[in-house]
Length: 403
Image 1 (cartoon, rainbow, N blue to C red):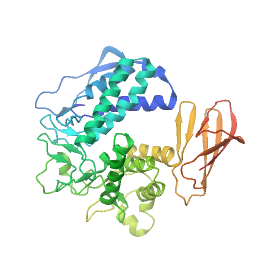
Image 2 (image 1 turned 90 degrees about the vertical axis):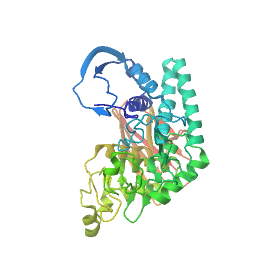
Image 3 (image 1 turned 45 degrees about the vertical axis):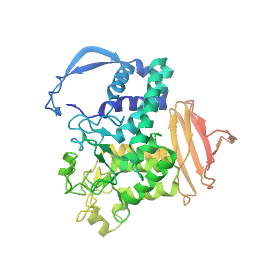
Image 4 (image 1 turned 180 degrees about the horizontal axis):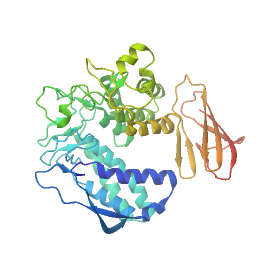
């Protein structure tokens, strides 16, 4: 599929950076991968499906990533990335119908990609691209905070004519969650604004009665705004004002990065599908399997709280990352396992058995509610660090973590 969507290709450098951060496997960058060929889009086309041809034209993964990033450095009048025929939310395919619409969320995401890949470029010895990534990221951060702040939250986008979306000026889609969550995840938001943005998200988008975190509110319905096919969904369904679980996970990740322990656990307990079927009444409301992740949960009467598309691996994959890396706090970086839990005060302790090759690490975490301190003991010896060094020598290792 060839499109003018503006985020698809940027996931290549994003995932490559995540992989290398976890593994230290820089050799991946020198693997050669071929290109595929398809005809260019015609002026009147937004996308087309076809069977591409594999070319006998190969380039390293590193250079594929560089090309993806360079391709993404296209900005509009506010200095924000062009949205094309949609970004992560491809339902907003008419925001940039005439090639001038801009995405605030994509600005945060691109900033994150640039900062992550700047480290790779530096370690790879590509000083020129390292400097380019840093300078583009700094400029983008400045433009986001100069041109995307709405007063109580970050806007979502700008239409071709400069009309804002995700603004208090809008009758519908006054606030969108992913701009707020990625202001935290990316690190591009200003500290005071991040606090206000996440408070606004909590106030306007967390529906505790129905146990959902809405993607945006109010839903698109009768206003003159036409962002694209998202408006074709019934209000409150899927991306149009319901919970899009993928984005709800990003919300919880943002609160976890802020170390808001109680909020993270409250929201995780809310979104956890098991808790949508604790009794007959809730089961009949939810109507889908409570043992798998749903892509979406509806958010407007008469369907509020009803699950949509289940067995959704996108949401499940992000939920796994949230649970393991952000709540339990285990993050592998090269040969180090960093341990920084974000669990509620009501948890006295928990245990994790972590396999690294032939070695089993038996990790016990005691929650003494010291908040910002982590004390780690490996086989009876205090490490003085917030991580342990991993080895593949076999046997069992006893790890005690006091937080």
